[in-house]
Length: 434
Ligand code: GLY
Ligand code: MN
Ligand code: MN
Image 1 (tube, rainbow, N blue to C red):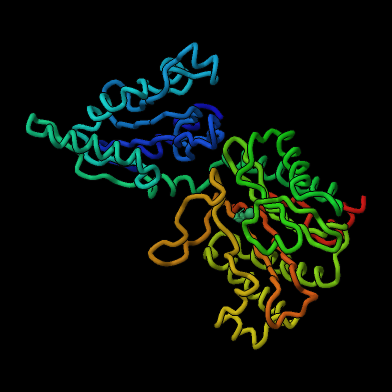
Image 2 (image 1 turned 90 degrees about the vertical axis):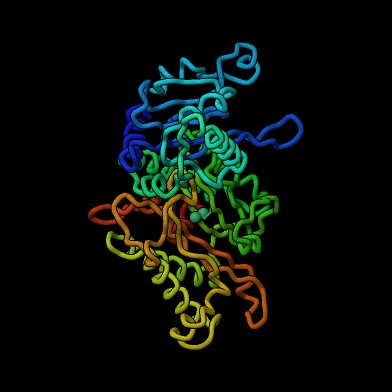
């Protein structure tokens, strides 16, 4: 992504704050996995969104009107020995030349330099609550400035959570972001199709996972957007199953919920298909209900519909379908009123999608579900999960189905970004037979 994209994002944020305020955004901390091993570092989404800077131990500061330039990065200095062991660093010069910072300072010196930049400012915007250790540092700097007010220093009087402003900005995806999300969606769809092609009874769940993720990698994704859920048979009724270590059985369904991350943008696709390539009558019956629910929900994803409308459309179709199959009793009104459908459909139908798989942005404004607007991207993911239990005919046991696509709201309609992942029964059976 070009530097001007990050520049535009910073300018958009600056337009929303006061000329006397300051924004301080840290990246994520590095986390230990075990022994001398760390988890792979992934920049904080807010930090990357504003900077394009991928290195750990970095803090971005935007200080409108600062004489020496308003955008400052604190980062690691160049260090030949450390770079030989751990990898390249932009260094202070790189932060200025390649990332458009007006100034860059060593991260070790932040406690000496940043309080001076905070003095005389009014509001301090930061990621309050996300990284408690960093919050404590910011409070420490504020306290230090307050202690010095007798010598004429003016301490900021408000500490404000940056989320509200920045997350509203991130909620509406721009053209450059949509291009990346289309790519993430397309490569993820190809991975799901690959999983259908290779799946055989007797394979382990993680082996199907490897084939799918290989497709993500070959298409240019370095990492997944979240840990893949590859759940055969009864495991499909565990919504966030990630052990992926069981053998797949003929006669079972396989539910895969997985998406590639591409240039820090996520896809989030679920597909469900029969391990042996052929849906049983019961699997087919419930699958068709979920698919119809998803289609009804997608009908409600255009501009002007309320956030809740796709969910309402999905639960109506699912409830009626479960009544028709005698998995639920009563009238449709009773099922909706008592929410008895939640025995089989216990999650919501979607969430915002972007740099984070459960992306940022409010779902309600003034306690009302917000209206859909062009540039919003979200998932539509109804499901039915039948765990064995009282009153359930055993022929339905352990059928777990989720069908999840990613949609983009456009001025004149809806684009299903993930439509290349097969989901019609005929399509899936033909692909698996081939
Ligand atoms: N992959 C998690 C979700 O679908 O929300
Ligand atoms: Mn999802
Ligand atoms: Mn998902």
